[in-house]
Amino acid sequence: MVNALVPETAERTPRARAVRSAVAGRVRHRRRQTVVAYLFLAPVLLFFAVFLLLPLGFALLLSTSRWSGFALGDIEPAGLDNFTGLFADGSTFLTPILTNTLLFALGTVALALTGSVLVATCIDRLRFQGVWRTLYFLPIVTTVVAVGNVWKYMYEPGGLVNGVLNAVGLDSVAFLADPDTALPSVVVVQAWASLGSAVLVLTAGLKSVPESYYEAAALDGAGPVTVFRRITLPLLRPSLLFVCVTQFLTGLQSFALITVMTRGGPGDATDVAALEMYRLAFGYGDWGTASAAAFVLFAVVLAITLAQLWWFRRTGEDA
Amino acid sequence: MTRGRSTGRRGVPWLSYLVVATGAVLTVVPFCDMVMTSFKGPGEAGTLPYRFLPRAFDLANYRAAIRQLDLPALFRNSVAATALITASVLLTSSLAGYALAKLRFPGRDFVFRLVLATMMFPPFLFFVPHFLILVHWPLAGGNDLSGRGGAGLTVSIAALAVPFLVNGFGIFLTRQFMVAIPDEVLEAARIDGAGEFAVWWRIVVPQTKPVLVTLGLLTFVDAWNEYIWALLVSTANPDVMTLPVGIQLLQDHVDPARTTPIVMAGLVLSVLPVLLLFLLLQKYYVRGVMLSGLK
Image (tube, rainbow over all chains, first blue to last red; front, side, top):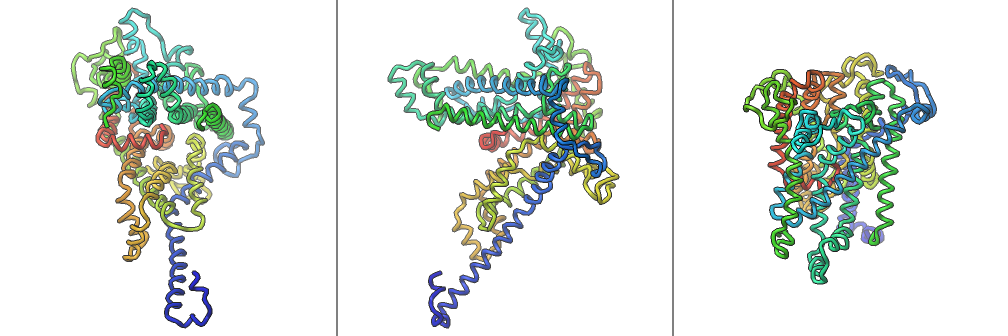
């Protein structure tokens, strides 16, 4: 660059010409790289424009409109009616639907987290960790239709779970048919299905705990419970946060399992927000209210995720 | 390094074995029940008292599943949609990942931040607008220019794949791995006269093969197992029905007492391909879940 700026007497020397053409070449190269880069990005940018920005805008428009779903010209502005309608007296959106959603997510996280901490700390002590992990992973690669139907069948009066209950002398339970037990029953399945990935993340977290910490604790005569509470748990914080946030996200928005197992029933005992949105739209053609419900759920998901991040940061000494 | 942390310290960790084995049994038993039920004869499934083993291992339910469900057609649709999605995600992610990792151009940071932002939006926000956009797609499936009159893109098998063709996480993942490729290698190829496309195809893609396998596998499994969107599209156009949707339909519409074994047989057949693929390429899949944690 400095050479390119020397006085014009140098212009005629071959060296200066070489430098100039190198600079011009670099500019040309830069420009060509920009063109190539945007060519490489073109499919992605086009996709995001048509299937991300356009739908978001469309959904926002619908959430503040009344529309029968036929001609785009029929979309009528409705202000915030769709939103207020969700929370009006007699609407089931707040209770039981949003409450169910929170209970479903909370129950899943609590079960999966407890189970995975237990299993991960135990697996860490065993040989053949890969084999165990494979077994715990099976539900993750299985379609929700298989998971849902197998468990639905296992919950039936003549199914495996009641078979076991009867074998040990207990009465049968109408798991999915009873409004009181339906939600906990699907929570168990959701937690069962997500245990493997949580175990994986926590096992990886455990491996990053230096062996010397355990040796030092052993020298000090610390028992297993103390070691777990004072060493394992604090050092596992990042992994726990990760599992917590991702499982909560999944729990708040997933409704495929519920669709397969109960379709929100009996009554609305297992109806969750995303399922209700789906039903409002594709069952009743109420696109406006459905879109409003989607945004309300989105706000809930965001708020809960941010709250978890904030809480973990506040209570963590190292963060 | 083999772990087995306390084996040296305190002998065999019996309690740990007990916990892990109990969990593993609870995980595997539903799969066993699925397989066992798929062999049960009429009146054997769902009757009291419960019996785990079938009276005979008869393949009748498998034959019935293939016939009643039209499994070949469902398989074909599932394979087509899954292949389309996986190929597209791999191609678009590695192209965009390369541009974001190794090319210098104005707007790069903005595009990268946009990609990260796309991962923030949950899928349920898009079910309604995506469906409406596909139905009203101009000049497709009998639609006029304003998107009215026909069924739009829902007539095509591509409708199953469209919302999943590009994946923000996939772009992010490939970019992170491509950043690690030394610039000198790419520069050397450019001096040898290779264009950017050749650099991408001959150097960058081969060097990032492991992460592409991981991404491909994650995408494949998700696409194969996808249910909600496929259900929507199949409701509009039954010709593109996929395996999960078809099997669920049979479950919902016929007498459950008689059809449960047939449904289980269909499920076994539909789960098998993914399970085999997972067992073969487990290492890559496990790494993918660790990287994404999206499940």
